[in-house]
Length: 576
Image (cartoon, rainbow, N blue to C red; front, side, top):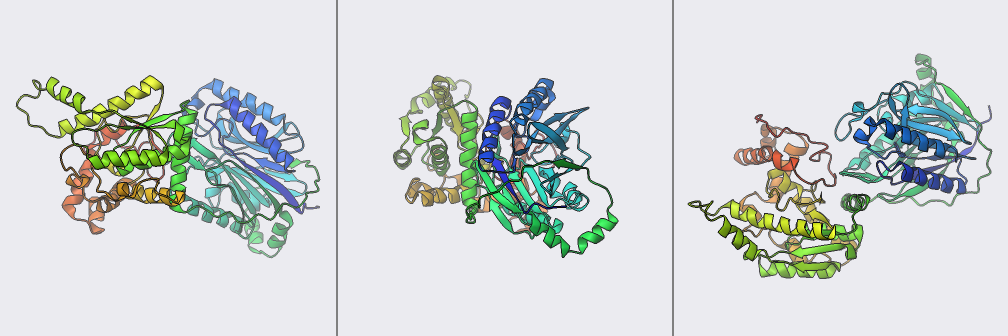
């Protein structure tokens, strides 16, 4: 059989919107046309690109599934002279997370995802039936296996059978794999291993963009049969990754690998092969692509927060955002991210001083606003705070001032921000970080008020790192250094510091990470070198504040274990 020496693959790493089936279909068609213009033989799109990922309980609506099938028919009709692999929801006796393989106006076959993740942020067994077949395609003498996301994470999964029993030289995996810090390294090692172990080219097309709390980083990848990186898509941006795949080199490599012959002898399950009559193309040489440098971890996290904020705001129909500026590092970093996401003209900062606000905090906030070029409003809470205390005087008779009066100030500020939101249609960004939200060092209906919590999954120690990164990126002090260097304070009583209520953040954050993100026990955390009574106190703060987190705004997920979609704890809970 004559083998093709090369196939040109285009991976369309696109940003779609959950539920916007018509808009997503139109985008898929536009990028399909771009791939054809690049003289590609095959174009791939991410997992569930047609519906957006994850569609959640939209999948329980038959009309939603039917609309996605009708849109798929329109896409298939546009596949003249090119093979397209598109993620969609298939409907038979049940529904399937599926990849349509189409060419020249016809759907050749369909692949159904076999491994359905049901951990962390994933809930696919709630909706889908797993697939049972692992078809392979034969085009111009090249053999191609198609799989979906989780399928490739298993060494003995469908990819193994496609490469062994079906002889697939190219493995195409379409994915919607959400980002968290550090995942890129894990993902790259896994894909390189699959390529080398199966002596196959592995082409991985990932979604980009944000959906509610989740951010998809793109970073689509191609590894050759030795596990060497051939191409990388942009991180956190749409991209069309075009590469010529040397299929003949896979065959040559396999001739020298006796392992496959032994494996084939022991594994006889045949793969269904679908012949596709591809056009024989003469490809002009692609320019030699320089290896794109991957971002550092701080740069990745920052870009994830920017993309997560931009997509949440714009996909939900907002244009401008408003946030309170306290003179502290959390609100400063949130403002910086918002400006990079939406432009300075679409960010409004509000200074809300009280009798406890230092002159320095007000000056620092004004300098931040000037550095970022955003509109600033100043609305004092002092008169309203005194009015509240007067109105509550009878009800509070005999009770001494305490945290109640501190929380009143935070709630007045939250009311101001929500009033501006109602009046002008601005989305309120809350500015609390994961250290505060974990420990309950935040005020329900106060500083927690808002539509989106940018730093919800960002520990305070990471906030400091990202503030420094923000300034390095700009080559200047966007966030004034005095804000970064000053001791954190809520400024709700005279001379207040965060360390009055919490240990220093370089002690607190490792304890929170161990308990919240790693589910370590009290004794395990104590064995890490922390004082037992302190660990007990922090664990109790986390456990007793679940009710606050349940009512918090959504925010960008950047760790392996975020509150909400990942970590789901009961509010009423006596386990200690």
